[in-house]
Length: 319
Ligand code: GZL
Image (cartoon, rainbow, N blue to C red; front, side):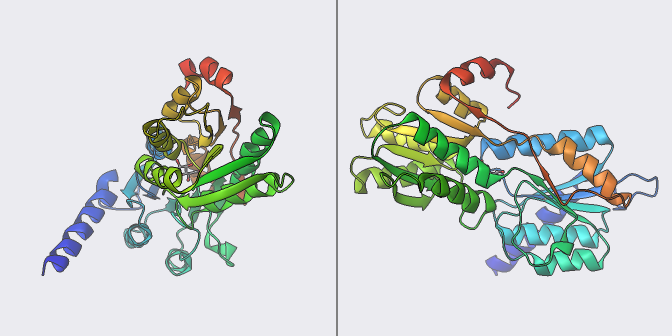
Protein backbone atom coordinates (compact mmCIF):
# COMPACT_ATOMS: atom_id res chain seq x y z
CA UNK A 1 0.00 0.00 0.00
CA UNK A 2 2.81 2.36 0.99
CA UNK A 3 4.52 1.81 -2.38
CA UNK A 4 1.33 2.74 -4.25
CA UNK A 5 0.90 5.93 -2.19
CA UNK A 6 4.58 6.80 -2.70
CA UNK A 7 4.30 6.35 -6.45
CA UNK A 8 1.11 8.48 -6.53
CA UNK A 9 2.71 11.26 -4.52
CA UNK A 10 5.89 11.30 -6.59
CA UNK A 11 3.84 11.45 -9.80
CA UNK A 12 1.83 14.38 -8.47
CA UNK A 13 5.06 16.14 -7.41
CA UNK A 14 6.53 15.54 -10.85
CA UNK A 15 3.48 16.95 -12.66
CA UNK A 16 3.41 19.92 -10.27
CA UNK A 17 7.13 20.49 -10.92
CA UNK A 18 6.57 20.16 -14.66
CA UNK A 19 3.71 22.63 -14.40
CA UNK A 20 5.98 24.99 -12.48
CA UNK A 21 6.51 26.95 -15.63
CA UNK A 22 2.92 28.18 -15.23
CA UNK A 23 -0.03 28.13 -17.66
CA UNK A 24 -2.36 25.23 -18.42
CA UNK A 25 -2.07 25.32 -22.18
CA UNK A 26 1.38 23.90 -23.00
CA UNK A 27 1.68 25.55 -26.43
CA UNK A 28 0.81 29.18 -25.90
CA UNK A 29 -1.68 30.59 -28.45
CA UNK A 30 0.13 33.94 -28.24
CA UNK A 31 3.22 32.47 -29.91
CA UNK A 32 5.07 31.96 -26.65
CA UNK A 33 7.37 28.97 -26.91
CA UNK A 34 6.94 26.41 -24.15
CA UNK A 35 10.00 24.29 -23.34
CA UNK A 36 9.99 21.15 -21.23
CA UNK A 37 13.40 20.74 -19.57
CA UNK A 38 14.31 17.45 -17.83
CA UNK A 39 17.37 18.16 -15.69
CA UNK A 40 19.66 15.38 -14.34
CA UNK A 41 19.43 16.46 -10.70
CA UNK A 42 21.28 18.75 -8.28
CA UNK A 43 24.33 16.54 -7.64
CA UNK A 44 27.10 19.10 -8.04
CA UNK A 45 28.08 22.74 -8.14
CA UNK A 46 28.23 22.42 -11.92
CA UNK A 47 24.59 21.23 -12.09
CA UNK A 48 23.42 24.08 -9.88
CA UNK A 49 25.13 26.61 -12.16
CA UNK A 50 23.71 24.86 -15.24
CA UNK A 51 20.14 24.94 -13.86
CA UNK A 52 20.45 28.62 -12.98
CA UNK A 53 21.75 29.38 -16.49
CA UNK A 54 18.85 27.54 -18.16
CA UNK A 55 16.16 29.12 -15.96
CA UNK A 56 17.55 32.67 -16.29
CA UNK A 57 18.05 32.35 -20.06
CA UNK A 58 14.47 31.05 -20.56
CA UNK A 59 13.12 34.06 -18.67
CA UNK A 60 15.27 36.49 -20.66
CA UNK A 61 14.23 34.83 -23.94
CA UNK A 62 10.51 34.94 -23.08
CA UNK A 63 10.32 31.15 -23.18
CA UNK A 64 7.85 29.46 -20.82
CA UNK A 65 9.98 26.84 -19.02
CA UNK A 66 8.59 23.68 -17.45
CA UNK A 67 11.43 22.25 -15.35
CA UNK A 68 11.92 18.91 -13.57
CA UNK A 69 14.78 17.54 -11.43
CA UNK A 70 15.25 13.78 -11.90
CA UNK A 71 17.45 13.29 -8.82
CA UNK A 72 19.93 11.47 -11.10
CA UNK A 73 17.37 8.73 -11.92
CA UNK A 74 16.78 7.89 -15.58
CA UNK A 75 13.22 6.71 -14.91
CA UNK A 76 12.36 10.17 -13.55
CA UNK A 77 13.76 11.86 -16.66
CA UNK A 78 11.75 9.51 -18.87
CA UNK A 79 8.59 10.29 -16.83
CA UNK A 80 9.24 14.01 -17.20
CA UNK A 81 9.74 13.75 -20.98
CA UNK A 82 6.50 11.72 -21.25
CA UNK A 83 4.65 14.38 -19.29
CA UNK A 84 5.99 17.13 -21.57
CA UNK A 85 4.74 15.17 -24.60
CA UNK A 86 1.30 14.88 -22.95
CA UNK A 87 1.35 18.62 -22.23
CA UNK A 88 2.16 19.23 -25.93
CA UNK A 89 5.11 21.54 -25.23
CA UNK A 90 6.76 23.13 -28.28
CA UNK A 91 10.24 21.76 -27.60
CA UNK A 92 11.90 19.37 -25.14
CA UNK A 93 15.47 19.78 -23.88
CA UNK A 94 17.29 17.48 -21.48
CA UNK A 95 20.68 16.34 -20.22
CA UNK A 96 20.56 12.52 -20.38
CA UNK A 97 21.85 11.17 -17.07
CA UNK A 98 23.26 8.13 -18.93
CA UNK A 99 23.96 7.47 -22.63
CA UNK A 100 21.53 4.61 -23.32
CA UNK A 101 17.83 3.72 -22.87
CA UNK A 102 16.24 6.77 -24.51
CA UNK A 103 15.02 5.54 -27.92
CA UNK A 104 11.49 4.59 -26.83
CA UNK A 105 10.57 7.85 -25.12
CA UNK A 106 12.30 9.97 -27.78
CA UNK A 107 10.32 8.11 -30.46
CA UNK A 108 7.13 9.12 -28.60
CA UNK A 109 8.27 12.78 -28.76
CA UNK A 110 9.11 12.39 -32.46
CA UNK A 111 5.66 10.89 -33.20
CA UNK A 112 4.10 13.84 -31.36
CA UNK A 113 6.15 16.18 -33.61
CA UNK A 114 7.94 17.68 -30.61
CA UNK A 115 11.62 18.45 -31.38
CA UNK A 116 14.23 17.41 -28.80
CA UNK A 117 17.51 19.18 -27.99
CA UNK A 118 20.27 17.34 -26.08
CA UNK A 119 22.16 19.66 -23.75
CA UNK A 120 25.28 18.95 -21.65
CA UNK A 121 25.35 15.15 -22.02
CA UNK A 122 24.89 13.08 -25.19
CA UNK A 123 23.10 9.79 -25.87
CA UNK A 124 24.46 6.72 -27.63
CA UNK A 125 21.73 5.88 -30.16
CA UNK A 126 21.82 4.62 -33.74
CA UNK A 127 18.87 6.87 -34.56
CA UNK A 128 20.17 10.43 -34.74
CA UNK A 129 16.77 11.59 -36.01
CA UNK A 130 15.53 11.39 -32.39
CA UNK A 131 17.04 14.79 -31.58
CA UNK A 132 17.74 17.99 -33.49
CA UNK A 133 21.14 18.90 -32.03
CA UNK A 134 23.60 18.41 -29.14
CA UNK A 135 24.89 21.41 -27.18
CA UNK A 136 27.75 20.78 -24.76
CA UNK A 137 31.40 20.05 -24.14
CA UNK A 138 33.87 17.67 -25.75
CA UNK A 139 34.48 15.36 -22.77
CA UNK A 140 37.22 13.36 -24.52
CA UNK A 141 39.14 16.60 -25.03
CA UNK A 142 38.66 17.42 -21.34
CA UNK A 143 40.24 14.06 -20.45
CA UNK A 144 43.07 14.73 -22.92
CA UNK A 145 43.80 18.10 -21.26
CA UNK A 146 43.86 16.57 -17.76
CA UNK A 147 46.35 13.87 -18.78
CA UNK A 148 48.51 16.21 -20.85
CA UNK A 149 49.00 18.47 -17.82
CA UNK A 150 50.10 15.41 -15.80
CA UNK A 151 52.63 14.41 -18.49
CA UNK A 152 53.94 17.98 -18.74
CA UNK A 153 54.15 18.69 -15.02
CA UNK A 154 55.33 15.50 -13.36
CA UNK A 155 58.39 13.29 -13.83
CA UNK A 156 58.81 9.59 -13.36
CA UNK A 157 56.34 6.89 -12.43
CA UNK A 158 52.88 8.00 -11.29
CA UNK A 159 50.28 5.77 -9.57
CA UNK A 160 46.90 7.31 -10.44
CA UNK A 161 43.55 6.65 -8.77
CA UNK A 162 40.48 7.74 -10.74
CA UNK A 163 37.18 8.98 -9.32
CA UNK A 164 34.76 8.33 -12.17
CA UNK A 165 31.50 10.21 -12.72
CA UNK A 166 28.12 8.51 -12.89
CA UNK A 167 28.39 5.03 -14.42
CA UNK A 168 27.19 5.13 -18.03
CA UNK A 169 27.16 8.92 -18.27
CA UNK A 170 28.79 10.48 -21.34
CA UNK A 171 31.17 12.70 -19.32
CA UNK A 172 32.33 9.72 -17.26
CA UNK A 173 32.89 7.47 -20.29
CA UNK A 174 34.64 10.13 -22.36
CA UNK A 175 36.72 11.80 -19.65
CA UNK A 176 38.12 8.34 -18.87
CA UNK A 177 38.72 7.64 -22.57
CA UNK A 178 40.43 10.98 -23.14
CA UNK A 179 42.71 10.60 -20.11
CA UNK A 180 43.72 7.04 -20.99
CA UNK A 181 44.53 7.78 -24.63
CA UNK A 182 47.05 10.45 -23.59
CA UNK A 183 48.76 8.51 -20.76
CA UNK A 184 49.11 5.55 -23.13
CA UNK A 185 52.37 7.15 -24.30
CA UNK A 186 53.80 6.83 -20.76
CA UNK A 187 53.89 3.22 -19.45
CA UNK A 188 55.20 4.55 -16.11
CA UNK A 189 51.91 6.42 -15.54
CA UNK A 190 49.28 3.87 -14.51
CA UNK A 191 45.66 4.02 -13.29
CA UNK A 192 45.92 1.57 -10.41
CA UNK A 193 42.32 2.01 -9.15
CA UNK A 194 39.15 3.46 -10.69
CA UNK A 195 35.63 3.66 -9.27
CA UNK A 196 32.52 5.83 -9.58
CA UNK A 197 31.84 8.53 -7.03
CA UNK A 198 28.65 9.48 -8.94
CA UNK A 199 29.79 13.10 -9.40
CA UNK A 200 29.04 13.86 -5.74
CA UNK A 201 31.32 15.19 -2.96
CA UNK A 202 30.25 12.41 -0.56
CA UNK A 203 30.81 9.80 -3.25
CA UNK A 204 34.30 11.11 -3.95
CA UNK A 205 35.16 11.10 -0.23
CA UNK A 206 33.91 7.54 0.35
CA UNK A 207 35.75 6.12 -2.68
CA UNK A 208 38.95 7.98 -1.82
CA UNK A 209 38.83 6.63 1.76
CA UNK A 210 38.66 3.12 0.29
CA UNK A 211 41.51 3.83 -2.13
CA UNK A 212 43.69 5.15 0.71
CA UNK A 213 43.08 1.94 2.66
CA UNK A 214 43.65 -0.42 -0.29
CA UNK A 215 46.21 1.31 -2.51
CA UNK A 216 49.62 2.23 -1.11
CA UNK A 217 51.67 5.13 -2.45
CA UNK A 218 49.04 6.98 -4.46
CA UNK A 219 50.68 9.81 -6.43
CA UNK A 220 47.71 11.32 -8.31
CA UNK A 221 43.93 11.64 -8.05
CA UNK A 222 42.09 12.20 -11.34
CA UNK A 223 38.52 13.19 -10.44
CA UNK A 224 35.91 13.58 -13.18
CA UNK A 225 34.50 16.64 -11.38
CA UNK A 226 35.44 19.20 -8.70
CA UNK A 227 32.89 17.89 -6.21
CA UNK A 228 34.45 14.42 -6.07
CA UNK A 229 37.89 16.05 -5.92
CA UNK A 230 36.79 18.12 -2.91
CA UNK A 231 35.54 14.94 -1.24
CA UNK A 232 38.90 13.30 -1.94
CA UNK A 233 40.67 16.25 -0.28
CA UNK A 234 38.69 15.59 2.91
CA UNK A 235 39.71 11.92 2.86
CA UNK A 236 43.37 12.70 2.09
CA UNK A 237 43.54 15.19 4.94
CA UNK A 238 41.87 12.74 7.34
CA UNK A 239 44.58 10.22 6.39
CA UNK A 240 47.24 12.70 7.53
CA UNK A 241 48.44 13.61 4.05
CA UNK A 242 48.62 17.03 2.36
CA UNK A 243 46.34 17.36 -0.71
CA UNK A 244 48.06 19.06 -3.65
CA UNK A 245 51.50 18.19 -2.24
CA UNK A 246 51.67 14.57 -1.03
CA UNK A 247 49.06 13.66 -3.64
CA UNK A 248 48.56 15.60 -6.91
CA UNK A 249 44.89 16.31 -7.65
CA UNK A 250 43.45 16.99 -11.12
CA UNK A 251 39.73 17.69 -11.55
CA UNK A 252 37.22 18.88 -14.17
CA UNK A 253 34.56 21.65 -14.03
CA UNK A 254 36.15 24.80 -12.46
CA UNK A 255 33.20 25.73 -10.23
CA UNK A 256 33.90 28.25 -7.46
CA UNK A 257 34.61 25.72 -4.67
CA UNK A 258 37.04 23.89 -6.95
CA UNK A 259 38.75 27.10 -8.00
CA UNK A 260 39.11 28.14 -4.36
CA UNK A 261 40.80 24.83 -3.54
CA UNK A 262 43.02 25.25 -6.62
CA UNK A 263 44.01 28.77 -5.57
CA UNK A 264 44.73 27.43 -2.07
CA UNK A 265 47.06 24.75 -3.50
CA UNK A 266 44.88 21.76 -2.51
CA UNK A 267 44.11 20.98 -6.17
CA UNK A 268 46.89 21.20 -8.79
CA UNK A 269 45.01 21.63 -12.08
CA UNK A 270 41.39 22.02 -13.24
CA UNK A 271 40.01 21.48 -16.73
CA UNK A 272 37.03 23.79 -17.27
CA UNK A 273 33.62 22.42 -18.27
CA UNK A 274 31.25 25.28 -19.06
CA UNK A 275 27.77 24.98 -17.41
CA UNK A 276 26.50 28.30 -18.77
CA UNK A 277 24.59 26.75 -21.70
CA UNK A 278 21.26 28.53 -21.15
CA UNK A 279 21.57 31.32 -23.70
CA UNK A 280 22.79 29.04 -26.52
CA UNK A 281 20.03 26.55 -25.64
CA UNK A 282 17.29 29.14 -25.94
CA UNK A 283 18.67 30.41 -29.27
CA UNK A 284 18.72 26.84 -30.59
CA UNK A 285 15.18 26.23 -29.28
CA UNK A 286 13.82 29.26 -31.12
CA UNK A 287 15.49 28.14 -34.36
CA UNK A 288 14.28 24.55 -33.97
CA UNK A 289 10.68 25.61 -33.25
CA UNK A 290 10.79 27.93 -36.27
CA UNK A 291 11.92 24.99 -38.38
CA UNK A 292 15.31 26.52 -39.13
CA UNK A 293 18.42 24.42 -39.78
CA UNK A 294 20.71 24.02 -36.74
CA UNK A 295 24.16 22.37 -36.50
CA UNK A 296 24.11 18.71 -35.42
CA UNK A 297 26.55 19.56 -32.65
CA UNK A 298 27.38 22.84 -30.88
CA UNK A 299 30.54 22.51 -28.73
CA UNK A 300 31.06 25.04 -25.95
CA UNK A 301 34.21 27.11 -25.38
CA UNK A 302 36.23 26.21 -22.29
CA UNK A 303 39.80 26.35 -20.98
CA UNK A 304 41.99 25.12 -18.13
CA UNK A 305 43.30 26.61 -14.89
CA UNK A 306 46.58 26.36 -12.99
CA UNK A 307 46.84 27.50 -9.38
CA UNK A 308 48.11 30.94 -10.42
CA UNK A 309 45.38 31.33 -13.06
CA UNK A 310 42.71 30.42 -10.49
CA UNK A 311 43.87 33.20 -8.14
CA UNK A 312 43.54 35.70 -11.01
CA UNK A 313 40.19 34.38 -12.27
CA UNK A 314 38.35 33.89 -8.95
CA UNK A 315 37.18 37.49 -8.43
CA UNK A 316 35.26 37.45 -11.74
CA UNK A 317 33.89 33.89 -11.64
CA UNK A 318 30.08 33.83 -12.12
CA UNK A 319 29.65 30.42 -10.43
C1 GZL B 1 29.40 17.72 -17.54
C2 GZL B 1 28.29 17.43 -16.55
C3 GZL B 1 28.86 16.80 -15.33
C4 GZL B 1 29.77 17.72 -14.52
C5 GZL B 1 29.46 17.28 -13.14
O1 GZL B 1 28.90 18.36 -18.66
O2 GZL B 1 27.34 16.55 -17.13
O3 GZL B 1 27.76 16.46 -14.47
O4 GZL B 1 31.12 17.60 -14.84
C6 GZL B 1 27.95 17.14 -13.21
O5 GZL B 1 29.87 18.15 -12.11
O6 GZL B 1 27.45 16.44 -12.15
